[in-house]
Length: 112
Ligand SMILES: [Zn+2]
Image (cartoon, rainbow, N blue to C red; front, side):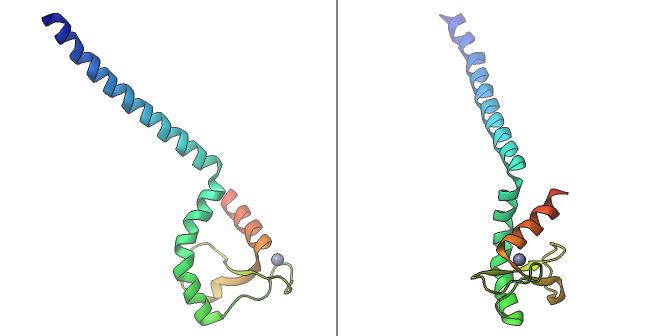
């Protein structure tokens, strides 16, 4: 009986370790997903900064109403695109872009 109790303790510790490992592996998997889907992740991350920045941009530049890249101005939505992705509050660092061009621009930037 005594032996059994004694043996149970390392087992419990073992279980704890396994659980810890499982968690770590899940976390790794999650991290891997984030790495492969880095575009989505980055977009999500940028959005947080976008909100405050966009208020600031609208205040100084107004609404983006055309695309500096493809020259269109008949679409519904245009973004202010940050040229160097530093998201500094420098007006010269922002150019109006349509959503597809902005996405392409960001994608080519983040890919490197
Ligand atoms: Zn465009």
